[in-house]
Amino acid sequence: MIRVGMGFDVHRFEAGRKLILGGVEIPHERGLAGHSDADVLAHAVCDAILGAAALGDIGQHFPDTDPRWRGADSMIFLREAVALAAAQGLRPNNVDAVVVAERPRLAPHLGRMRARLAEALGLGEGAVSVKATTSERLGFTGREEGIAAQAVCTLRAGPS
Image (cartoon, rainbow, N blue to C red; front, side, top):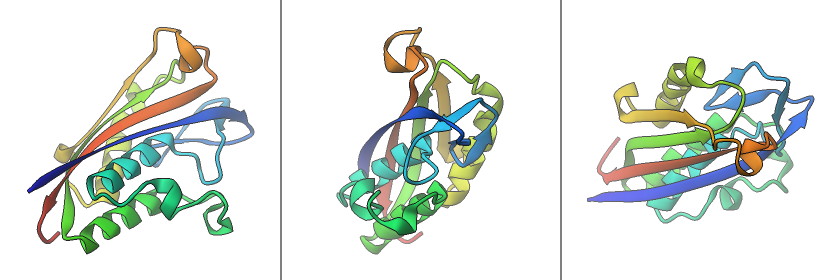
């Protein structure tokens, strides 16, 4: 049995914060606003896992009203999502994700993002795809107001 989940997340830019994407700190003059580290890519992947397992969404499991998650590393969310899916007899099979941002240029960092996500998911890097694109200066990402990410994850039944 294969199950498919889709995740989407958006965070606005905020001065004075680090920019973390896929568990990697990216040099940039602004980071993303959020209760945790605001890793929009990790959050989209987390939602894709939870969706494939029919376990709700990231906000249900890691609410921004819970002080435990203030400034939290989003890799924790991914590992926990994998554990929640495993409790249902499901394990990650593969992930495909895309980050939408005009700046900074993400191509030099995609390999490290892929490696960090694969590690958190318990997958080989060959089962994780991370891409980056712009929105051709259209919309909130085009105006450099924030960053968006989408992810698709397949889960399969069986032991990890």
